[in-house]
Image (cartoon, rainbow, N blue to C red; front, side, top):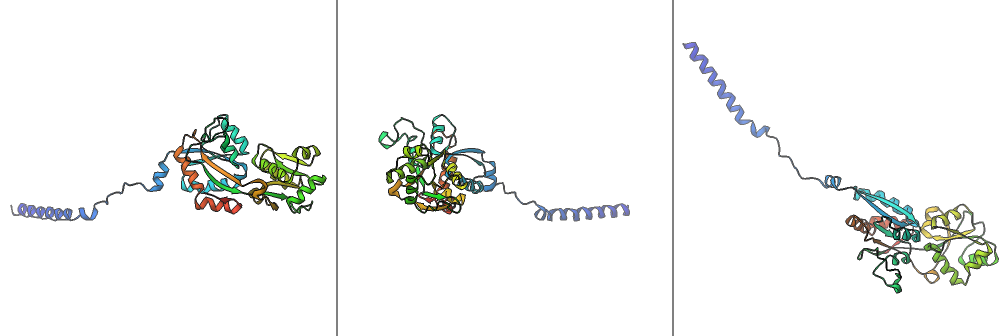
Length: 294
């Protein structure tokens, strides 16, 4: 009997000690509450992937490709798809029903033709309306440059030299087609100097390119003695610019940009257009010779 009582006493003591230990452990072993709030990166990762189609003048090829890499850090869910060509070709593609969210032209003429807010006097005489009103901006300014091949074999130093060489038939000039903004600026330079494009073409002293990149390539390959291109294209191709046209000679070279009203991603298109006016994108544009305007 005494042994039984002793055993019960020992068991009671063990249970008491065990219970005290259990009472002290919850505060020490309780798992911390989990933070369920998502970080901005997680929210961005979960954002819907969007393909944004940007039609842009060929002269913006290098800068926009560089900016695209930067923008991926800002909006990782947005894939930028570029279509680079002459502004006239891009305008035609839009008119023919091509998918496009943003249009950036190398001259107001092509944008005006798509802007339904303008009348015939303003440049829209076809009744077309593709511009999302309130989004159009003058994004950049460029310069019309006279560029020469490496070493400048013909010794051309100015537009005056170009004119003299064309008149005596001693040089070959590359220019853009008449539906290409850089070609239209060249025609204004011809008019400023009193030159007849028709006569020059008949004399065989000018060649053409369907966009500014084709004209630049002719100069780079020394297939011509000089070419009229944009200052930014000369910079990107490493060509020497011997002269720059004044506003009196051909007007300002303004690049308008706008979201189109056919976009299916208005919010993303507006956001990218706004990014193009910011400090990071402007630094890229300025590095090759563009002058940001917005």
